[in-house]
Image 1 (cartoon, one colour):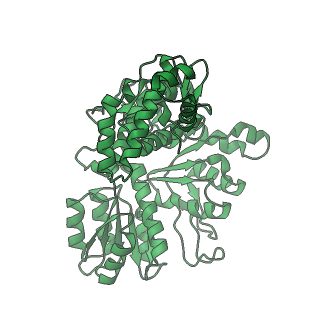
Image 2 (cartoon, rainbow, N blue to C red):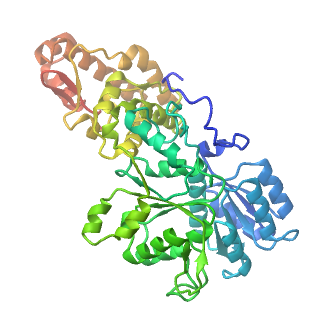
Image 3 (cartoon, helix red, strand yellow):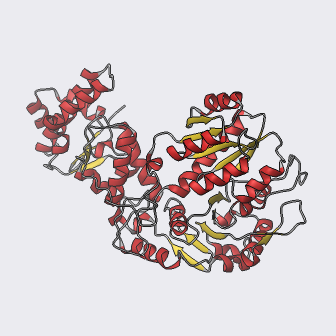
Length: 513
């Protein structure tokens, strides 16, 4: 590509290359609905079309045939099919691809068959008649889990010189190489792992890498954000509940520890867990046993727990807010993720990856990349929001730009500073030169159906000419106005309109409007 973006020539050895790999970069997820009821198929197609490409099948045999021929992110499966039992179909789906989330549809929410399917590893179940909003929420959640467990982490945990390119998880700095080596050492060891780091550093990516390179890599991977749920709902989400356990518990619910039996459970924001839930999680860590909320039957599971936090758990223990014994159990092995400000040498590689993805996503075929000045500013910023913030900034720049090269005046002010972007007097601005950029700008405006081509192209030229003349005169407005052939008052107006700040150097801020 013209932006100089390189991708790895091969995926990590752990990824099954016999399986389709396009799902992680598709613009629209895909859903397979298997049901002999035409009304259900029609409802699914109409209500879910905005979130997925919906493919339907009216029998088990047709559904399995389409599943094997296609590339699906989730499956909606009826319990009772005319030619085969839903559980048997589920087993065939699991044999084909254990990572596809399967949601059962059943006439009775408390169906023993549905509960049995959940215990075997189904993602969830939903009662008929289907309600559109809960159905859409459940399918979105399943697709998200599919993406979590299926996107390849493009590192080799056993090789510190592995090519980079995986989502967010990129780096050759010494700090990141230490992280990669730590993953390689403990991924196959069946012990709890605590991942620590600031928000936005990529803790979930570490959890996914540990899962993919573990002995449980073919089993279920589920993620729960402990901070996103109220205490009572979090307990039910993790351990399940019996019918009537609390108001609104109209049927038995299978929790994540049952669903994830044999697999890996990622508990994000573990520091936000209530003390009652902490005690039950501790018991699971100690002997892999628990009880559903409202139940008295002891259940056994086999789950590997990976936890993550950005909170000071030791201080929380001292303050009586967190159980010391749980901290010791979780802290068997700790992996520390460095903040981006401590590995700024990785910023250019991250920029290349995010730029390439945003160029495809926003359909910007003429985008060539970032100017050296823009990259220098991005590489010098301290990134309080870490990698997540960098990704958001690159996406915003690509979305907003109408020029082939993103220059400093296209960067947000939190990166450039409130007074604008410093451009040294006499510095080259070839990336923004009208000879290289104006034809592409006009073509892009025409392609996008702009009805303001003349004004936008004229503003682009005028900004460039005025900035270059001010650089030539070292910011002297009288000389610049004379060279431009305009009055000093008009030059002042243009300086204000284009947010050009005159100090010892000429500073060009973000474009006005």
